[in-house]
Image 1 (tube, rainbow, N blue to C red):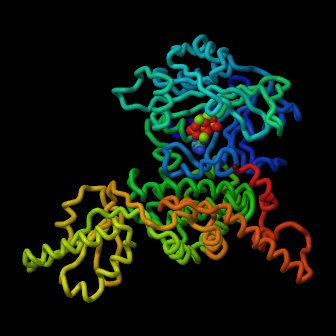
Image 2 (cartoon, rainbow, N blue to C red):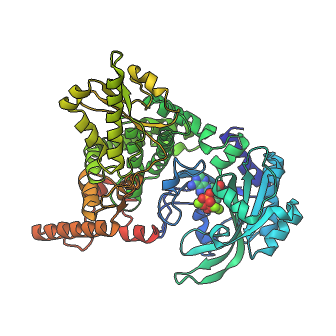
Length: 582
Ligand code: ATP
Ligand code: MG
Ligand code: MG
Ligand code: MG
């Protein structure tokens, strides 16, 4: 069943149960400075839940655009690595505003999943809040779920809140058993259930929230005027279940988009590789980019615009890692508009705007990314040297003694790298004329889809998947970098200073979280407090400059030209952003 059909069947089902089907609201919450983006289906109904607004219906159903890339729910760093997290996704939901409560919410969910979509009930498992005996009982009574398949979990998983304040309540979640056939369906303890879930073999698909409270700024819970129901199910995850695949990216929602990325980049897409991660990041971030631009968020250095910029630049870096040096994301964004435009007409309507702004932002970052990455490499040279094999090209006429010497030399490089010397510097050293003459052969490496033909014999010594990277030296010597299990700690300071992070940010446009991510890949920490100090100092300087020149004496931080020309979203202030991005 295609995702478009899954979505409409959901809405049709709830329409038949007396729900008013509403279109998705904007990703930018209306009138709500406490929230960066719409991050769940209930967000547009927040005031209705709180009893501050009334709606002309007591039951509603939507497929809501969501972004979780900042604030309380932030999945940005999962993207590309887990099979089920996106920055942008669609949340299918049904809502009761003081109308039905737990019993019907459970009945609807179970009937839809098992009867309408035909999911095997033996593969469904349920969690409730450990204090919620009522919900536990209803699952047994209404849905016929075996008691041993219902687990009571704590607040972390089974108490839902949109943000630190606002509507909240205990929840109950439905999980799909993804274990391989032999183990599937076998009973597990609560601890095992949680462990298997962590490993991705129980897939959380649907969250039924029994909204009973409003949490105030002091953390105090107040009962809502009438208990409500708010449910949310990720369309991408449901599609993966109904299409029988083990990752959202393997559904028809992503197939065309990834295919376009592969077409543009030209490197083959294999799921379990670094390239696979990069392609998934590109596909995911292209969706977020297209939808955020369509809803009026403009890349900038503050608030919502900064989150969009972070997403965009993270995507550009992954295109860069795939070898691209020219705009690429923009092509993937076009594929998103083609794939999703029929369901979300705002994409079509703002096509020009979306495409031209993506391209401009991409070009702007591409202009500095090379220099930035070079600087980064200097600031944070590889702490983890994953070299355990270096291959040599041995000339056919080499004597056994000469061959032995070549291998000895390779071993020297390896030992010195493991002892903590910089790998690239070693390559340069051993590539000097003197060395080359002395040994007469070539150091060899291969990988990354390319193979130097004369090293094929040597390549046969390595198992597939062991090779991480190809490096070409200016001297024509080739080194195999082999990603073994060996990671080598090096004696260098493990922290990138605030000043360095600031330089990457200010001069090269590297969003802090991008630098953080790159640093983490190399085993470095980042001095975030130091970065904040630098940033504050810069703000003070620019304020003083303006004061000296007699313009803009107000106390607020200058947002720069991008924000002035920016559309909605740019006015979001940094304080609010920081307050929600813990
Ligand atoms: P998870 O534990 O997998 O991170 P969650 O508990 O944070 O999910 P909820 O807040 O309960 O998710 O949201 C309701 C539903 O929305 C989830 O059950 C899931 O189907 C979907 N969902 C949540 N986060 C994402 C995401 N980042 N990408 C895609 N779907 C998501
Ligand atoms: Mg989550
Ligand atoms: Mg969860
Ligand atoms: Mg959940």
